[in-house]
Length: 297
Image (tube, rainbow, N blue to C red):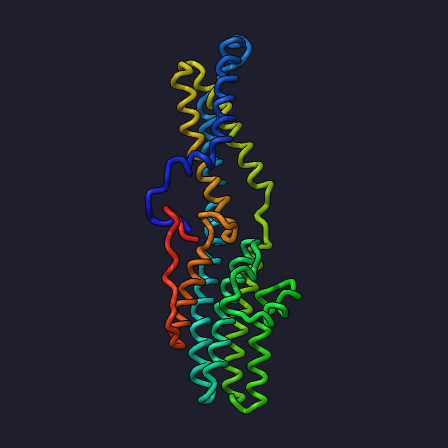
């Protein structure tokens, strides 16, 4: 997640450097083509590139809105995960009979592991990496056999709660409350997976880039009377605004892409870890996740 800090200019340029090279090439080719064949190329009214620019602005506005909706939904999902994780531990402490501190600690550490595993899974990384601190080797062996590792962690908690009910350590009404919290966590995981698996139409970006290059070409023809020393920088400046907005929308549309613009799932999971460990009285509590220059992972 990008922070309210100075984003390096090099980071911005890297996002559109290839497109700006194409724009420069188009400007040079069109400038010399209009100079050599000015008797054959009809004049281009400025209204044509102006119309194309307006159409591109409308399309970009729609894409930005849709992309931000996906990003904001992902952030709300992880906000719900924070709340449900806290509720789970508080409910365990309230509903279980005295003497179950070790069980509460085990379930709490599993919930912390689930948060980290879900974040890494959504980023298409190894979900069980660095989870030895929260899960036993026996638990890890059971989870490795599942394709959906976070779901397997939730299943372990469900089985332990069922055993507690059979032993009489928790009444049926309390079990229903805990089950509701686990259902909410499962729903949040499913909504995040839906966003991850639903791809924004690739043709949308392809057509948008095509329109921008057409706009640059027509604008270059319209400005053929201007010296190339002024025309080409002007084309680069105008087109860079369109390309930067389009690239911003492209990054926002995938909030689990393991990029600086995605949802800060590791930082959120670290916050959950701090909260839950303090709730159960753990002495060794980690520090909050620190930003990496201008973004937080």
